[in-house]
Amino acid sequence: MRPTTAAERRGSNARSVAGGIALVLLISAIVSFAPPQGATLLSWRLHDFGHVLVFTIAGATIASLLLQFRAAAPDLGWLLVAAITSLIGLALGVLTEMLQDAIGGIFSRGDVFRDVLGTAAGIAAAFAWRVRARYRAVAALLLAAALGANVAAGI
Image 1 (cartoon, one colour):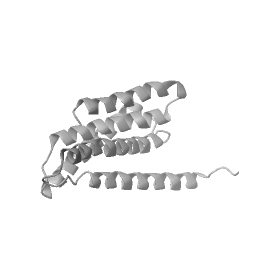
Image 2 (cartoon, rainbow, N blue to C red):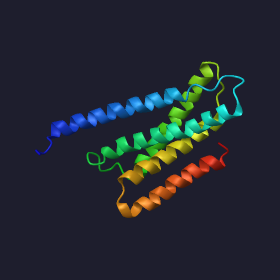
Image 3 (cartoon, rainbow, N blue to C red):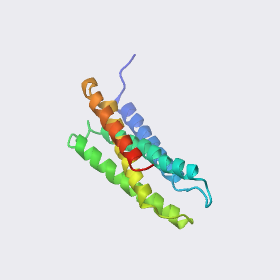
């Protein structure tokens, strides 16, 4: 097997970034639509948990994309990746609620909170995927704590 060239690696990274951005945009669009008026409590609870789930995926995707660039940008440390991912998750959460409000729904601070908690769980998952084996248990505990916070928040 021949080694990959720098051009092939750049092309692969570009595809990863494009795919990641498309996934995050799709996820944001999915949570922009709330259940209709008169929906059952179960529908609303599933929608609430959907915020956590899709923002966990979005957070993991964003953090993973940023972590790919650590070799090219050594100043991009773990804490900075977590901070940037958190800010993007918060912005997407607010934007999806604004979109929902614009199409006849209600802006929900609770949904934004669930989006942020989901993003935190995604960050923990991305870090768990990339850290050395001896730290995976710690990352898994952080992920469990983030998901547990979602349950405790009354999802």
